[in-house]
Image (cartoon, rainbow, N blue to C red):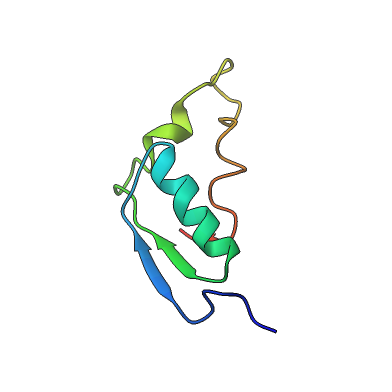
Length: 69
């Protein structure tokens, strides 16, 4: 049995927190989500909440799951 959104393609132009979270949920339901980010910079959230400059943002491991970047 397939997922509810199998075969649906979504271009994700959202950024920061709420938009990517919503498209992540769509991906979990089977949609093929392609995230489009600003060239050379990526999503602004990737650089936030970072205590140590060389450490990854806590959002980085969570946000791209199940999406194509």
